[in-house]
Image: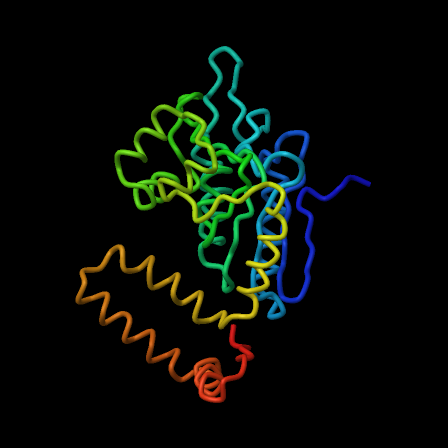
Length: 267
């Protein structure tokens, strides 16, 4: 029996999805897309999941698209029709990016190794990105005559500004995890020796927090990028009105007043 292309584990509210094509640096095939999409949907529909961790097997997080996979492999037949690479974006990467950014729980990218091409941008789709010091990020698209996908053209300028986004995209240079943290591309770079323990502590912390409020904060921050200041303030009021009627708000205030830990349960 073949090993799954996505390994799934669960512990105390934390669901971990591990891409599992280690020999190919976890590069994407159509089959792996299918397994990851199913695993994400299962996590979204499981109320026992309060935090999702996305990581990779072996020495890579994800090297992007496997270029030998039929969904993108160039048609080398003389006079043959070109491969429709855009169709692969519509079929696989657009739904993947949208699903990750709309998960009903916080999503942590645990970047354990190289994150290249769509793999790098998949990590950036997540809410919090933590990378091992030995990891790196590469916008490798220009090297094969393509543009950043899996949301890269939208994410990069918003994370690091136009100048950095263009340099990363046009040059395709490898960016060390430490430098990715320095320019604001990711949240945190940690030493390899403590990487796994840092991820466990962070995920457990997020799983214990008010999940609905965390996800609403993500949505509010994303929405604010298309709003003026006054509209953003009004949007905040609308969202606070909903959250203020939730169990977690009542529990949070009660716990604060009683000087005890809160036990949140909304999702």
